[in-house]
Each structure stands twice: as C-alpha cells, then as structure tokens.
Length: 433
Image (tube, rainbow, N blue to C red; front, side, top):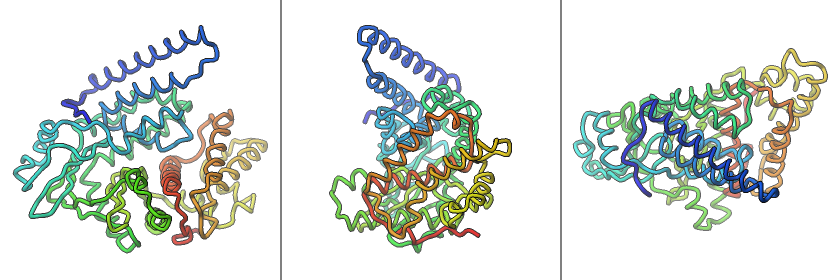
C-alpha cells in the first residue's frame, strides 16, 4: 500500500481537504442528475460508489477522528448504503500508512530518542495502519514488540474535525441537529480519551489483569517505560485478524471456541466491571496460533453508570418487559419516553421500544444462541430500517450512553455472526435488582 509522506495537521489544511471533498461530491451529484435526464430509471448505486470512494480517500489521508467516524459507521450496516459500508470497512484493518521518515520523526519528538537508540531493531515500515495510529515491529533483548505510534496532529484536531464532519453526517445519517450534537459530543469525549496513550496503557494493564482468568483470551504485556503520550509499546501477539482467520476455513468447534471467548470477554466487563471495551471492530482482535482470542487495543473504554446499567439491563434480564408499568418506568429513566409525551405518544413509544428491546435481548434470554442464523439479523436490520423512516424517531431519544453501548453490543453480535458461532450466553449475566 502506498505510504503518505505528509499529513494535514493544521485546522486550515484539514478544512481545505474537506472543502475539496465537498466539491468532488457536488460534482458527483451533477454527473448523476445529468445522466438521469436521459435515463429516468437510473438508480443511486454509482452515485453512492463515487461518493464513498471520494469521502474515504479524503478521510484516510486526514486520519484521526475523521477516519474513526468512518470506521464506526462501517460497523453499523443498518445506517449506510452498501457502497459506503464496503469502502469504510477498509479502515477496520488497514488505512494508508505514513512514511518511515515521518513516523521516526514523530517517535523521536515524543520520547526524545530515535527508535534505533531504544530498540535493538525497529522496522520503519508499518505492519498495520488504522485511524489514529500505526504499528511497527521492534526487537529488544530478543523479544518481539509492537510499537503503536499516533499520527501527528490527531489529538489536537478532534474538535475541529468533528465540526467539519458534521455536514457529511447530516447527509449520510439524516439526524436532526440536536441528535447529531449529542452523538458528536459523546464521540468527542471517547476520542479524546482514545488519543491519550498514557491513559490507554494504564487501562490496558488494568483490564488485562481483571480479565486474565477468562478462558481462551490473551493480552500482550505493556511497557510504560517505552511508552508515552503518543506511543505505546507492548508484546507482539502473533495471529490472524478475523478475515484472514475465516479464509482458513476453521472448524465449527473452533468458531464456537473463539465466539465464546469473545462473548465472555464482553459480558464479563459489562456485568462484573461495569466498564467495557467499546471498540469491537475486527481489527482489534487476533486469533492466535494456539487458538485463542488476542485483544490488542484498549483505547476506547465506556463506563456504565448505575443509573443507566440498572434500567437498561433489567429490560433484558429481569422479566420486566412482561410488566407494562415497570417497562414504561425503565423507558422513562433512559429518556426513551419523556415526561411531556401525551398518552398516545407513551403508548406508541412503549410498543416500538418494547419490540426493539425484545429483538436485541434474544441472545440474553436463551442459554445457548446460534449467531449463524440469518433470521435474527434480518429482523434487526428490517426493524432498524422501519423506524428510520418514522417521523416519530426524528426527535432524539435515549440517554447518551446508548451510543457506545449499542455500538458495543451490535458490534459483538456482528463479529459473532461473521464467525457463525454458537455460544453459551449464560456465562456472565447482568446483575440487576
């Protein structure tokens, strides 16, 4: 993959990139509607393909929060046209890397020494490039290490980038401005944490220690002495990402084993730690040679406060959905039903959200769940499409915690679907009063 020799870092440079992309998209629309004059039946497939290509190219060159948004959207297959999902999925595994000399300068600026003066060997060519940083191989005292180096300017451009992303998000997501502002504020808070690599090292050590007794889940050792605000050094875990793993045609037994490890990893955190690894895209996991799940990134952690955890998980585990009054009370605590709603609105949202939660909760309600069956996902996506067209859902509802908790759980479901895994979903249950 071609390397980038530079990256726009100032607000002016990054703004100019967005403006240029906006002009390209405008040109795509002009071309589309010109063709439609001569062919009224022309669909939007080519338009979506052209727009997705131009937007992804721009975001991948900007990197940082702009590319992270694309990565997040690619995980929600119910939000975007297929062309966008296919293009943005590239950011889950490999984005265009920065050149060796640029990354070495970044490393030296952060730690005060060049990589060659710290490690016995350092590969200046990236092995993996993502939205916020890229990974390089290093050797020290005979041990192979992974050195994650953050792209220059990423942390400083989060707020301005998100403002620039807003017009694209309006067009792609169809959210109201209020709803989009809530979404952007929560995303900004998580991204600011995600670019603080010192925080990530502390959390990585904390979470890997807390989860060390989970079956078939492994973590790298982290080295704070060779890490900093924009650099993380950890053990190299050898393994395959999900796409590579699936190409080996693994047995159903192995699929189930990895799927169980993934389910236990997430639900142990949600229900025992009340904080969860909230970035479940496949690029953050490896399937190791000894058939275990390697977790290699703890940058995005979402804490689950009691006033969210109790009402939300009571809906999926405590039989509350069978009690209308208690269900409505939980919906009110979660801002899914407002005090100002009329009785007719209360009834409408009660029925709509009950149907939604009932779908979401199915894996929790059975002791064993087969994620290979398409009917479950077909119903989820169909329901999402249905409510997206309802004017009643144009007004934002639900507390901000839904943004990352929904992303986490649907991301988990999606990976388990790709694995076609059958898992025991009764291993770690919600603790609710």
